[in-house]
Length: 339
Image 1 (cartoon, helix red, strand yellow):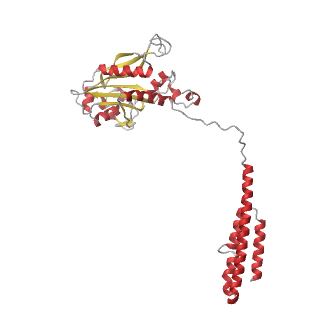
Image 2 (image 1 turned 180 degrees about the vertical axis):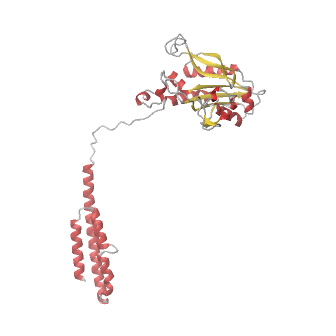
Image 3 (image 1 turned 135 degrees about the horizontal axis):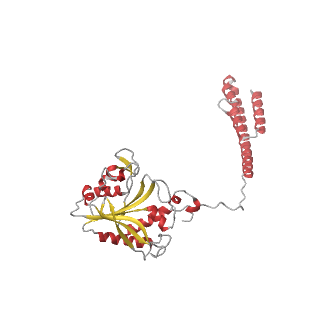
């Protein structure tokens, strides 16, 4: 038994000395000290040893085990240190090299313009309300006094999912939903993405953004609408900005108007930016049609209101003097860095 233990010790120590990797050390530990290892086999064979010799043989086995464990730990420390030094040499970093510049992003021109518009109207006491982009035909058209045979419902203009569900063409449905859910007084704006079947060019896109607003209360008149939009124009384009209202037609407002502002480039004198007219169109508006109020559960004999709507991209194009809407969506970093 003693000779066998000496042989096991000698073989194990030789293999430990020759091991050049941590993985090999682990294999040696399993081969000699594991559950099915050489020393474990010797311990299991103690039953064949004379009872008076068992303590001595057991002590010899424990001494060999302790020696092998010590040598394995020492070899592991040496190999781990060598591996770490080799890794440090391989991954050496020259701290004198210039660091990579951190690219910090910023808000998109559309978002900058949207936040400016929201700030103005929130300052007037309006709340910002959002609604679904996939909408019912009723909310997008019928509740806004747009009947079934209206040209706006043509499939060439509107993305229909079914005959009753579509991608909203305006954020006006948010106004209808607000009228159904809240009692006047109501002061709100509804920004969001809308969809129309347009070809992509410098001024059109099948997906763009609108900001629509609405006020409903007792004794609201067209003069309230004019005063609100005049103040909005001054806040957005400058204190010398004036507004002009031109008669127009919208199914959901009566009377209706298009609103122009004096060109903030030339001050209304006339230039290339305003095409020599001195005015720039920015939005449409009007007094809410009594039928629209009634369909949403509001008595037009007691309440009146006004509504307006503008394209967010148009505001951004005008404010930042961009001449092509496509630039806003091409993600060209050279363009976006300018903002």
